[in-house]
Image (tube, rainbow, N blue to C red; front, top):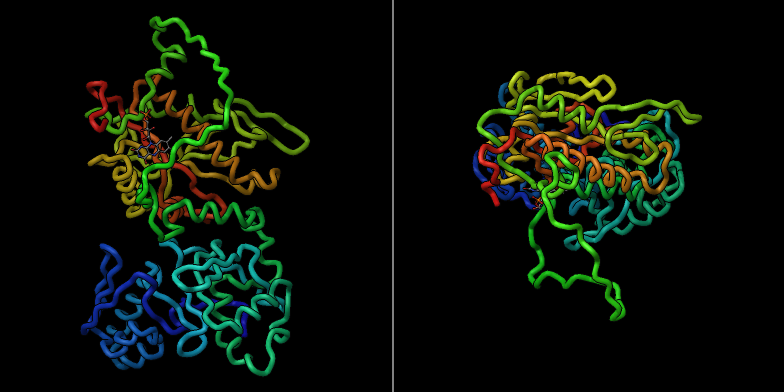
Length: 464
Ligand SMILES: Cc1cc2nc3c(=O)[nH]c(=O)nc-3n(C[C@H](O)[C@H](O)[C@H](O)COP(=O)(O)O)c2cc1C
């Protein structure tokens, strides 16, 4: 047994289709999942066939392409694509397999941290157990896998791992082979980890419930349906109100009357989600003013616990863990691409070109806001959660989401006052955002999205 997994997962295990993936046989079989399709190259027909049965192995594929280097490369590339795209399940421990694992989302997350010198191992502190589709799944969302544990003897072993153990302590004579077969997959999926590795950043700063909530509420980290699916057939529940007496107090309202241009109350009254902006792009000057008024650093204070800063919007502990990444589609005076906003310097730093993720993020935001073209600018709100969790226990992730709301309203009001086109977006793809920023999705997760454009030409929102 080893604590280090270096090879791609597909080299180590029997392979089958992930749940929801259909394999249509053929010389180069076709895999389908919803509306997505992948056609495998026609290089290893005999071996590919076993994919449908969960019996494809890297060894069989090597055999099937022996003496044909080009075919072998094509098969290897195909497996890489299937692996990264979450098309595969990984099987271990016999036939039927005792353990079947698959990726939870589209993100290929960093592998579980390893410690080659580790002598003891335990259940990941992020591991939780859920029943789904007749399987009992062990899953540690930090590493992006669901693991169906189908042999009850493995549950006994997992329960022993509630405290650190040497592998030798885990088996009796009957299940030694089973453990040896299952152990590499338990480690590769992060259900079991070397003692102490989760005490390192960034995982050190996450509480299990926070990480689970984050993983379940971001595209890319989950594959289940997402967003406004109206999944319940019954009518919407009645509003829940506290029981009250028959004593009613009618409240006074302010006298009607025109407020001066730019007055806060007028801006509040005029604020709308404007999904479609003007024909001309937003300008760099407008973008600069918008960021200055919403998100720049306004002051810095030295405290016993380090430096805290202020911005135009409030933030628990003045830690200001939120930061902005812009995906620019169309700004007069600024090249398209990704930019990091530096609030202390009020500056944009160009990110290395990311290509596909930039387009995907812009397209997703367009679809979410019923646009036919990408927005001028997509603002990604990232959270430096470790800096907040360093101070706050139990409330760190809840605070992050509250701060996102506070910032979103600030952006709405500033954009309204500036006659720009603002609209919040309810969700986004954490995996694509991580590809754009090149940041570990748990060191600096993206937690919110907002689109911004030039003001509409006719002052009405055609989507309403
Ligand atoms: C957190 C949040 C998420 C939202 N997500 C979306 C979205 O994904 N797509 C969209 O078109 N509008 C989105 N909106 C805008 C709402 O649809 C909008 O606020 C609502 O319809 C009320 O319209 P108003 O903002 O013009 O008052 C979002 C608003 C908020 C605050």
